[in-house]
View 1: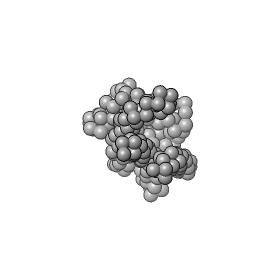
View 2 (view 1 turned 90 degrees about the vertical axis):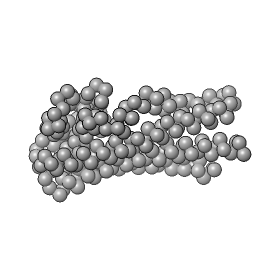
View 3 (view 1 turned 180 degrees about the vertical axis):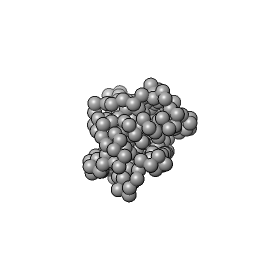
Length: 227
């Protein structure tokens, strides 16, 4: 139990930090590899969306590093400055990945639909799991707190589980469309795009492992109290 508690906190923290470091490291490496098309990330995204017949998605530039995302509610594809303006293989891969989410949305890809539908609930659960231990400590109502914590982490874990196919599928779509459009022409570009997207995907794997570990930790605590 104590060993699992140490893993739940320190092990998953180390895993998450390593995943973030790896993304930045791999991105930094492949951002030095120019793409052979000479297109910026924003231009790559525009070509992919146009090819798919998606004309109602705005391509916008954010102000923060590696904050790229697709906003299905407001129909916006947001790229960080280095990917919006950059002409590297890394920028091309990230832009294509976000377009992969737009393609999923266009085709009503089920896991993306589930993730969109659960966003509000997950936001509430994410706040609750940090507040509940404090409430339980103050009120000494440990049993109800453990039950609520299990529900909260179960919601977060399921959300992270659904996120995995969404992210892996978006990356697969990105690689496929770049190859079909002739934008990924060299082995070095292929290696760069795959490296960046695979590293980014592992951050979602780490998030799932973390949420699963905390769920199991609180389930074991609840089981221990019953025994």
